[in-house]
Image 1 (tube, helix red, strand yellow):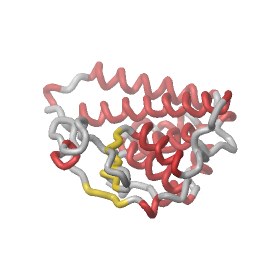
Image 2: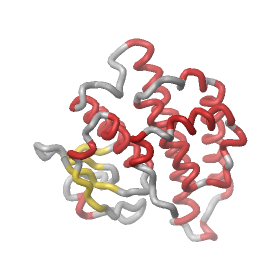
Image 3: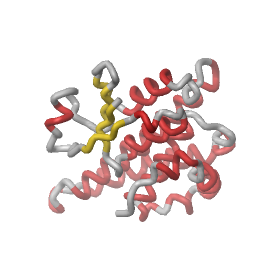
Length: 203
């Protein structure tokens, strides 16, 4: 399998953490990419219309995009250890994944606003609105942090990748002050080998 990859993409990191947890990481060939919100990578575009990272090329040549799809595909290959199959555990994991993906979406939109748009085109209301989404999601995870304990699934993996990305790209949010119990949970989860192996380079 081949994965169009960016070491700074939190969605790529999510896929790679899942691959490590399932013992599939060594079977992934990482392909460099130049994906950008306004300049699409022609190499990825030739294989998938969204030209985004992560994009996985399966062994039979199928192109899969979106971290949620790729993670579920890897989970099927790896024996189903990351996505609970049914019942309350499945809906909890998927709900946590969706909420944490929302943190990442808001953080990326903030990042694009600050780095892709010219200074005179930036919207302070837009940036504030994305920050409000992030803070609301953090409050939800802080209030329900007990439900994260002892779990290693697509929900907790995505939460951890989202928190790591806030550290990387939006350190001024100082999310740990707002969410001390969540920070304590993250410290433990971030020590997992899969998280250590996928830490992005310092920027």
